[in-house]
Length: 256
Image (cartoon, rainbow, N blue to C red; front, side, top):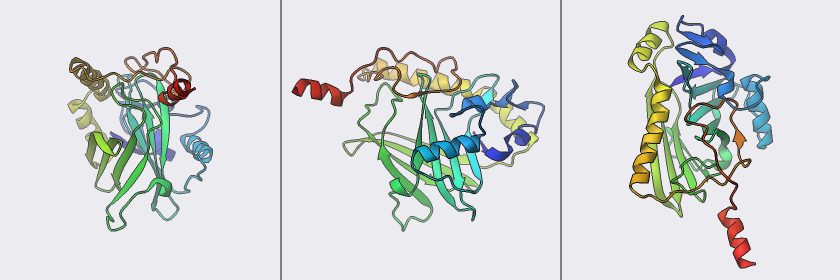
């Protein structure tokens, strides 16, 4: 994954003849691979979405942790926008979550859902309700508990899915920072030439394994409920099928 200052992406993506901005290359950054109105800059999209969620976007630098588009293909299960204030303090994190049905949803993480034990100075914990269908093996009536360390020479992101207070699934991302240079980038491209294809293949392989274990399938609630992505990619644009009543709606019907 790469961490990019959103106000300097065109310059950053000109570092090598193998990188491009909004143009095909071995590694490219496309504005269409992220949420919001394409006529607007990323900062403008963030500011608008923050306002829609009752927040004011911090006035400092913003770094985007994401996958680039490799050899024309991109799928980001989740990208993180680290939003700093004018004093270089991490103020807010936006998690941009995508599913394999061509849909996207934003979770704004700030003091409203901060569950940090103030003695744990090196990490921030957020707990919030699940609002977006991602996995066909996890129900919607879940909560997330996510932990972030502040990005420095390394970072850690731990995501836990809970149902009824009991853990269902957890994943941990650990990254070590490397300087953004052509040499480092070329070395990573040779080691992982098509990372995003590997990501989507891994997702489907794990789904096949779970299906083979007869894990109950949780159907998508139906089209038109969640926001569509700007750019749909092969393997991540399955049809959500017919719209279904939510469990809550079904309970209301049964009781009436």
